[in-house]
Image (cartoon, rainbow, N blue to C red; front, top):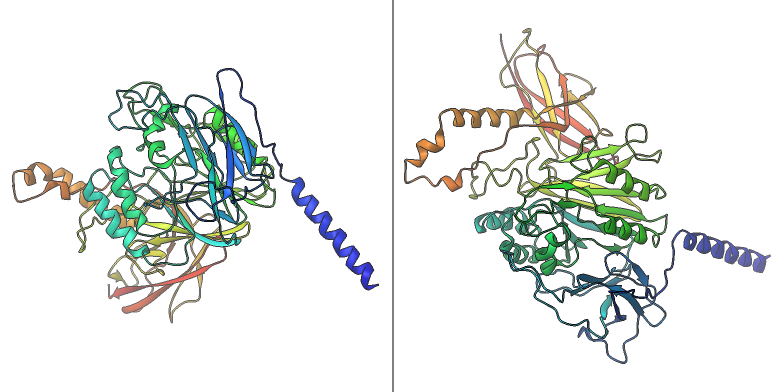
Length: 555
């Protein structure tokens, strides 16, 4: 009986392994070049002595994905691969689970080779890759072993977007400093608009981010492209010279991160026009890569421009095509930035092109720069740069456990428990006929969140209603800035040579917040001070509590 039980366990294990493997495809190691192409080849290898050169004693690594940006192959048992390349190509390795690519002095992953024999056009203001010469005989990719644990945490930045070196300083002091010394972060990623049009700021910004001391991936944003490009494909040339391919993939644990450049630049030199979407070659890469992914794993699509629920800011036809590619994957997430608001958007089967019963979660991460580093400066000489939906500037942590994840929002310069903002009028008149709205901005809230409140010692817990309107505090800030506009403060202050107008950034007008709840608490309260307690439950089942003082006066 003992041996029969053991045999059954082995058969069950083999069946499970075969079933798991059947959900992903092992690709051939070679695709032959056609007319007008060259054949790139090389090895993915274990760089035991970490000199980034393949020595005779260093073994190849089998089954690793290598791509030319469209086609994908898997290395053979010796770690060898072959791919066709054009005269404007990037060959790159997809960092696999249990392995790590080298990083440079700025902790940027070095996982690619730029093949640009013609360099970049002469009219580029911001330089790109100089002519690289003939294709090397071999293009080898070193890897180092790492713990491919399914449990890990990453940090996500939205739109640092500095337009000058002072704003790089804001970013470094307000955001980077409080992350230095953390040991619980596996890697980080910036979701585009790394800089604000001045591509020479890539270097000082990378210097700042590198001080966190973890590998850092990047997404291309509309303010990271070279406007002098004659077409969309070449608009990422300067970005590529610093960060590598703008469309690529990498793996940590059971999570496949696919990065796409979804900024379609108008085919016109000097144009700043763009639309959200993907080129056919990018769709082909995503499709080819998903063939290699087990259906049990989590697929995370990283982009700059959000998937639009309505309208064409992200081309609806492209959104549908992307959803078509994801329809067989029960575990998926997409992340964007760009709009300078925080939003957890759910695409449902009955109201969008999403095809699964469980809705698709699209997380539009708030920005490190808030409202483009605008606002009056605080005690640290950094702008109080709240976003238009009332979310304070900051960044996100995402914690993964296998194919499950939890997203949290961290307010820059605040304690970890700063999860919401509570607003109630001051000096409520007892027993009056006034409407008294309690409003709560739960920064990382969604349609799946639940909020309730109580007046301690006065009421039991009562539910709050989700609403779509501007944050009341930010609306108050908006009124103040409107007064500044009406008195033409810039013209008046410009006459005063002691005022540095560069330090006064006008906050943008309020927009509706997607994470606002309210309740009419009335005025039937005894005069004095009362404590409002708010309880917020997020889509992951996490519960957060916050308090606010309410002052009631005799009518």
